[in-house]
Image (tube, rainbow, N blue to C red; front, top):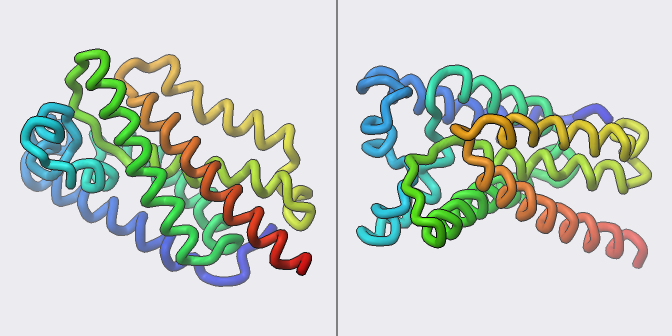
Length: 198
């Protein structure tokens, strides 16, 4: 499966994340929780008690350190180009943004029920939503040769392992983003397939 058009939105999202990272660095360092909160990182008390729901969105564009940014942007570049080509720009953005929001919302619900209070940021919820689309590629006869199901499952499992092993990673955002991405991508795929059969 090769992309035919320039994946403008994928490149744009990467550029936005990099620019915000550089601004974070210039204003005190991307490793600082205080800087992250100032720029819109998610923290449950500020969302629930202060009503700062915008943090569910802004947190998607912040990262803690270069390694965090680099890992997410590599995954976005590697998979996002195909997802944007396959679904089109509008559906790609819907999957990305909604998955990111779902990952952060799932984190919020977990922390509300467990009493945890972390500072959370990163594009990983949105990226995992994009990664879930690999399963759709494995279902579609037009793309399954490039994304066989066994490789798709192994690849996705490998993506989840760091979040399981490293407690500093927001694993709930990964789960929430992946499930939302899978729901949306399968819905888009289902209606597209049925439309083509009419």
